[in-house]
Structure formats: structure tokens, C-alpha cells
Image (cartoon, rainbow, N blue to C red):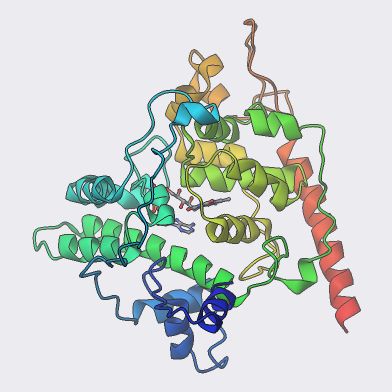
Length: 376
Ligand SMILES: Cc1cc2nc3c(=O)[nH]c(=O)nc-3n(C[C@H](O)[C@H](O)[C@H](O)COP(=O)(O)OP(=O)(O)OC[C@H]3O[C@@H](n4cnc5c(N)ncnc54)[C@H](O)[C@@H]3O)c2cc1C
């Protein structure tokens, strides 16, 4: 797309200075480092992250000054959230705000990032995705700030581990950006050619329950409700809610991606598509079998006290922990059933996870064997 735009502008006699500033490492720089595949980019995340770590990432040293327009242009004020049906205050935006948010995060909360990205009710993650996607802060600026913070000699080992994990998150961001750069096809086409015709469903009787955060699985539902309420969802909840849609309901990853696109404050199609394909097992690094998350087990490990569930699902505020995390109870075949009889009771599970996951993996295995035979 960019190359086409650049060619068109140059043909029209307009000089073009192309600067890769969306990613910290320009896609073609890591590709050049990879001679094995003639610099065609990486479809393996692990290989990419190794090459990425070896690339220089010079900090942004100056702002680009654009030419002063010849004509005076009036500019409309920035739209307010209320104009789009959003509630509350519009968030603070802009370069200065993004830099201040980055600095405030690195001052202290970032030192607990390793826990933050796993535990939805734990310490905060950076919340920089919107600023990064709209370019009000450059990934290189964030990385330079992390390096500066890591120069503190008095950091504990686990605090350094957290800063490394934050660097790795930005490397993962670059990984998905370079996928979109090199594997330019349609954003709707799975990266893995042999998974292009996997029969994901477009509909499921519980699709609306998933969208509304009423599947009966608290971690999935809390994530979806956090998204509707704030325009953002914790990364652990994203993975579990996306896995639930694709594997428990067997619904197409594109349905989920498009549903979130309307609500997420970030605007980064490459990251949305890359992550959804990754979860659905149709994108980079196709494993033998997709990574199916067990929503109850995930809740027990990452929301053991049910703090996240209670925060976003008011119906669950009085429920004791075993019910919240879906501990199987005697005689109920492992199903989560909550003894709630209020006006708006929290629903029981819309599907039996174990049965749905087994059924999905059987269909997936059959399809893969068929696709393998067809390729021979
Ligand atoms: C199914 C699914 C869909 C997702 N959709 C999007 C999306 O539409 N847009 C988006 O920006 N991110 C997406 N992510 C990635 C990630 O969840 C968000 O970037 C992160 O939660 C944003 O919050 P944060 O800024 O606090 O992140 P932090 O955890 O603090 O990370 C710092 C930055 O690193 C980058 N980053 C972290 N994790 C990832 C990742 N897995 N992939 C790419 N970059 C990452 C982001 O730019 C993020 O702002 C998705 C993840 C999943 C599992």
C-alpha cells in the first residue's frame, strides 16, 4: 500500500521521504538481517524476536517539521466521545500527554509489568496502545525510555525482568507490523494458506451472549464488559475471550476481530488481525494444534480471588470464590452454576467448555489431515 502510494506520488513529481516510525525496527531492516529466506520477512515469532534484539533502535531525536502549507486551512476541533455515542469525558490525547503517560508508567508501575500483563486485576499495564497506534508516541521513544530506566543500578532482578518483558511486548508489536508489511494479502486471509478454507462458523446461538459478556464464564465476560465500558481489555482476558469465541463456539476469528474493532480505543488493523490469527491457529507459527484456553482454569490461575470478575460483573459481587472461578462442584458435571436469583441473574455456561473444545479439536485434526492429503 505504502509502496504504491510512494510510486504514485513520485510519478506525479512529488518528492517522498518515507520514514518507518510505526515500528521500532523497520520491517525491511530485520528482513535484511535474515539472509536464509532472501529477506522476505518472518512468519515465526521466535526467529523474529531474536533478529529484532540484534537490531539498533536509535531513539527519535527530532520532530519532523512539515512544510508550511501555501493556503491557510481551518481545522475542526477534535470530536468528543459523546458524538459517537460514548459516555463520560474524552480521554486526554496528543504527543505531550502520551510522553507524560509513558514517563509516569516507567517511573514505577513498569517495574511490575511481568505480573501486570498476566493478571487482569493486578498492577496496570502501560496503556500505550492507543498512543502508539495513532502515532502520538513512537515505539522507539518508548524503548529509549525503557533503556534509560533499566540503567538504574539499584533495580531488583524481578524489576529488570519486567522491563525486559515490556521491551518484548514492543518487539511483538513490531513482529505483527512486519507480518502485515511483508504478507500484504487481504487482512481477511489467514496467513497459513492451508487454513484458508477451515469451516469456522459465522453464527452460533451464543454469539450474542459472547458479545454481551454473558457466556457464564466470568473471565470471558469480565473482559467483554471491560471492553464495552472502557474501550480497552486486559491482554489476558483478550486471549481467553478470543479463544472462547474461536474454539468453544467455533466462530470465525474475523467475526471477533470486527466486533472488537468497533469498541477498542486502539486503531491498529495489523495488530488486531495478527493477534486474532495467532489465537485462532491460522496465522504465524501454526502449531500442531491451536492453543485452546480453558476459561475456568485461566480464571483460577490469573483471577484467583475473583477481583477482576467482581469489578466488571456486578451480578457476581456477592458470590464466593469457588463459584466465581468456576470450580467444579459435586454432581454438576463440572459446570459453573451460580445460585443467583436476582432480577438479572448471572447465566450458567452457554456451552460445556471441555466438550466444545474436544469437538473443535477433532474437527481441526480432521481438517488438517484432509488439507495435508490434498497437498500431497
Ligand atoms: C485477540 C487479541 C486481539 C488484540 N487486538 C489488538 C488490537 O486491535 N490493537 C492492539 O494494539 N493490540 C491488540 N492486542 C495486543 C495487546 O493485547 C494490546 O496491545 C495490549 O493489551 C494493549 O494494552 P497496553 O498498551 O496496556 O499493553 P502493554 O501490555 O502495556 O504493552 C505495551 C505495548 O506493547 C504492544 N503489545 C503488547 N502486547 C502485544 C501483542 N500481543 N501484539 C502486539 N503488540 C503488543 C502494544 O503496542 C502495547 O501498547 C490484541 C491481543 C489479542 C490476544
